[in-house]
Image (cartoon, rainbow, N blue to C red; front, side, top):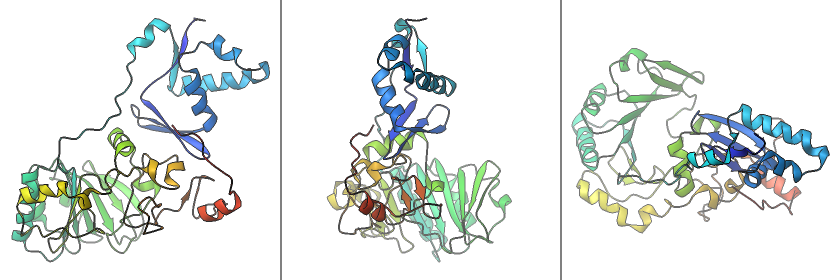
Length: 351
C-alpha cells in the first residue's frame, strides 16, 4: 500500500484560470472549482507515492496534503494504485476529428413559402449536416418540422416566439432536442416529452455573441473542439430569410442558396475568408486565455470589444476571470478597471 502511486484519472480535465481552476469530469458530467495550486500539485505529483510527496513538504504542510488527498479521492479525480496497475489506465485522446464538411447550420425562416424552405433544406440535406437550428421569426411552420424528420439531420433545435405553440405540439417530433422561446414573460427551463424548453425574456431570437453561464457546454465534444478550433464558427453555416449564406448571422455574405448547388456551397471551405476564424481558440484570445471557463464557452469573432482585433474578447461577455465574478454580482469590476489597478499581473502558467 505504501508503494501505491497517485494516479489522476484522464477523464478529469483541468483548466487553469487567472485566479482559480476548473475541473471537468467528462465521465460523470461534473464540474469542480479548485485553487490553482491543486493544478500544479497534480501535475507535479502524478504517479508519485505518498512518501515521495510528503518528503517534498515541511511537516507543517502535511495536514493540507491530506486534505488534498481526501478531496481527490472523494471526488474520483484520482486514486492511489499499485505502480503495475497504472498501465491499465490509458490517456484520453483529446484530438477532435469530424467527418462532416459542415457540422451545424442555422436557418432563419420568416415569410418564406413552404416550397422555398423545402428547397433550402434539401440542398443542406445533400451536404449531410448533422445539426440544424431553425429560427422562426413569426408563426411556426409545422409542415417544415415534419419534413425534417425524413431528412439526414441528426438533431434539430428550434427558436420560436412565446405564445405561438403548445408543448404538446412537439410530442411526436423525435429529432427535436431543444426549443428556445424568446419574448417570454420570465426565464426558466422545463422539460416535456424528452425535450428542453428554454424560455428567454429577450425580445428577439438574435443572441449572437452573448456569453452567459446558461450558454456554456460541458459535453466532451465541445471541450475537445474548443482546444483546437473556434467553438462557435468552426464548420458552421448560416442561411438568412432571403437565402444569404454566411459563416455567422453577423458575417459576410458569400452568395445565395437559391442560386448555388450543394457542391458550390461545399466549395466555400476552400475560401480563406470563409474559414478565417475557424482556428482561433480561446487560448489565443485576450482575457479569454486567462479564464477558467474558456473550454466550455462559446465564442463570437464578429462582435468584439475591439472590432479591428480578431483576438479581442467578445463584447457581450461580462465575466471578470481575475476576480471570478459576473457583472451584477457584489464586488464586480470591469476587466479594464482591474487591469489598471494591477498593471504588473501576468498569468505565467496555463494547463
